[in-house]
Image 1 (cartoon, rainbow, N blue to C red):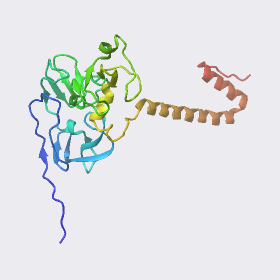
Image 2 (image 1 turned 30 degrees about the horizontal axis):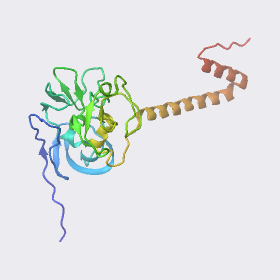
Image 3 (image 1 turned 90 degrees about the vertical axis):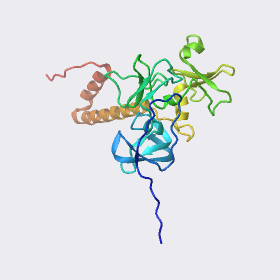
Image 4 (image 1 turned 30 degrees about the vertical axis):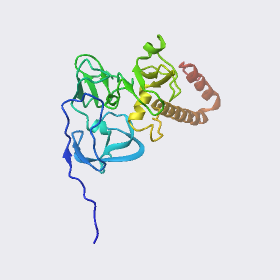
Length: 261
């Protein structure tokens, strides 16, 4: 007699009307849900230690996620289970935050916590311009991270550094603007965007988010090499002297006409 695994029946997401603290509803691996962003197939909660891009917020993640086993569609667990609104959130307690599945308007907005663009799922304030990723909504004003022995407090960099908007983060060892977690007793600083990687699973799995700027730069470099390769072939065809004149014109940005007498 052979046995087979019994799958739990799919169920629709149940959202609470509000969430007072940054916490994700508890779910079990293998649990299935139906989500409005991917209605054609159920999503199963799985955990894989590799990088993925959440199709909800468009941010990276690793480890736990809800995944379509047919399409490979992935959602962070906190994106899949996000409530329709947040009240009294520790990072924006003055106003209610409403969940939006799509970016708003024509202008690209940025998350007010990590400073990265908000390209998909986001919580927005209906009374002011505050906005944050669902992942950033999982963070609080004061948190304990595995990289430091003391609790860290989130503050704008200008409030810490006396007007300087950038400093070296203890995790990425880089300087960048944006909010920062700090321990004033030790002088320990952690970018909010680096702290987010500890929430979305990247840090625990030893993954560093890809640098998109480097990817674009590499693509531009390859395109430039291809263009000059074509020009090189043309030079061989039209003659060395005239070809050198064309290269000089390209280098100086000038356009010259070559006239034959």
